Length: 332
Image (cartoon, rainbow, N blue to C red; front, top):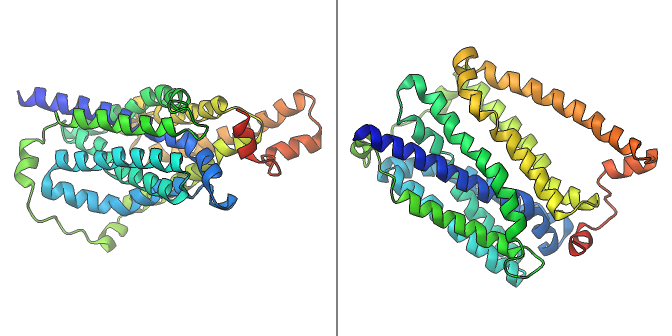
């Protein structure tokens, strides 16, 4: 029975992670576009999306302590409830044209993200030590489902409420969080975790962590990759519209981004087992840089093959900054 319970928990966590990635892909695809229309100044257009990361960063440590005291199920339910609340606040703020209210909604989604990051760690605790990396990979692979379904849902749901500002998509975010809440009601903490709940949290000395080379490597790799991803993907939907692409094209870009993020999860556990945890991210960073370099060449060649002049190519590579993405959005 205990083994069946752990398998059920792992399945629930995998589905909940996929639902979360679905919701965050809606934010990736549409939040920048909504921001641009609601922002009092254009330079504020990416601020609400940044609030997702800010909410996650400020909540992560507190989320760990809360789950230590109340148990993982309670922590996951609280975090997911914030996700549902954030979706509803976003719907209301978009309909009312309230920029800072929308920022509050995205901040609540960031709180959900902080708790959702522990799904894979909770799944790892359901299997023997030798299988932990593979269990984490399976949970992250749920993002593959989201990579296909999330952007498509964003494109489909944006007109649910019949307005041009995509409020319906944030209603979908609240709905996805609601489904997660139902699933988490079936999740049960393992016996040893229930016994540990309520005990004083173990003291962690930051200086001791920083003294460990593997921790420093993980910290630097996570920080750099996170900054690069946020820098590119926050502006990508706005840039796509500025280049004359449709909202559907913009969501397709996010779809490919998510496929690139979560596709390797299917075999990342095997690679970690074979080459080690430190060598694995280094190999993928080198591969990532190579793809970026070749992708840049390909983009220029496509523009030139279509007969674009050198000045036109330069203009489009700079995302046609003189055009107003809001005007382009209104036309789509």
